[in-house]
Amino acid sequence: MGEVRRYSSGTKWEPIVGYSRAIRVGELVHVSGTTATDKQGNVVGIGNARVQTTQALNNIKTALEAVGARLDDVVRTRIYVTDITKWEEISTVHGEFFKNILPASSMVEVKNLINPQMLVEIEADAIVDRDRQ
Image (cartoon, rainbow, N blue to C red):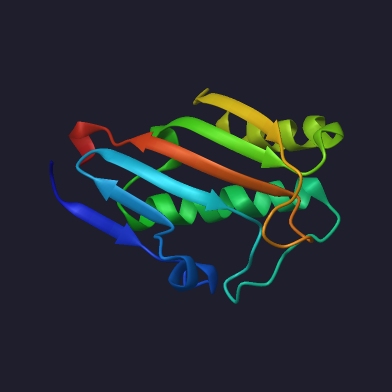
């Protein structure tokens, strides 16, 4: 199975719910649903889907790097949004991060996220290049 490495961002939800922000097992990395929170767990970019998407993806980048991966290793993203009419601004930011990587991706509208100020939540899966392990 390989070595298991876990990363916690330190936000309040991880110990309450009982999960890791990211987990790496061998060359596989799974990043949990990630929102636009700062290091203190405060929502960033309230009312602004573009800012929230940027923050969520930067948080994913941090989580990946904490377990020895990087954005280039991402093979799949899942984007959950509370307002699908914002798809273009959300997709544009996703494209800025992944334009040369081109992971498989999906976007789904959901009724709510855990905090009503959150507009976007993103998951990512990655496979670390064996040459960098």
